[in-house]
Length: 289
Length: 121
Image (cartoon, rainbow over all chains, first blue to last red; front, side, top):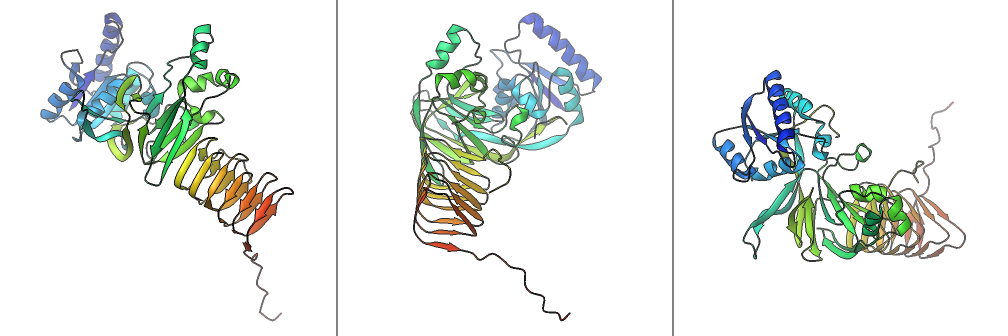
């Protein structure tokens, strides 16, 4: 049985209703009907996942954006289920899994090609934050970022000023083999990412996290590589560091926010590690690994 | 060295400091500061600004920076003009450009020669 967790996210009511009717029509067409629940402020993803698993549901389908998919994965908390994903618009996780939109998502769910993929884990097992008393821990299929956070960079004056004013900070981390430090403006810890050029770099089946660290660049390089900076493709920028690790502990600077997509999931100090083949998920034939 | 210049698998950029053992199954390029040990089964490139206080083990290596430690290379080692090695070297093929600095012992594996045919003609 399929359980669809529909998260309207930033869509307005009209857009959402149009996509919802398309979704229902596709579910019927591919004969993958199931129970559908909408995420609201009163019914969180966690509550819906708990409800579904309590009723013996074996396949949970996240319908929404990458944040929705990550919320569903995190809500599992070690319980076994097969995850599906139907993106409402083109997303990075959708690209990785080979799913473009609602129609292709439904077709792929119906095909049930299940793979076991690696998951990045932040502070696992989850720690209780001493100040907020909230469990702080998260899993990610795509990537974790820290430092610079620029959703987009255009060539207007405000964005260029923002780009030049990016602060540097010294990041210190340790692995089982060595300790490292570098002054950076940002970093990415990549499990997988939606870019065909990075195929050999960011595979969610290699049991490795790719760590990208971007130092302060000259103004010319900042402008030249602004797209790569905004996209987090630091490996395409000369002068960046690229390391491959299975576990690292970021100790400094303290209180540095760690983001999955736009959500802050933890703050340093934090331990990030890979859990090989920890996620059972339905993938498409156009997947990027 | 490998005939094609492929993107290195691991890159330690300038100003990055590593203390410990850096191991990789792929190519490594180092422009930063490392103390400890560097080991790869593939190719190793030490950039001109790199400062290595570590033993190096690799299949092939090009050294343009400063290395203090023993260098064990399975195949080919090239020390460029700006390269400086203080330590012992072991390799199969060695190239040292004019201007490079090398202080230490060098031990080379003899190239394998085809065994002469023992069968009477």
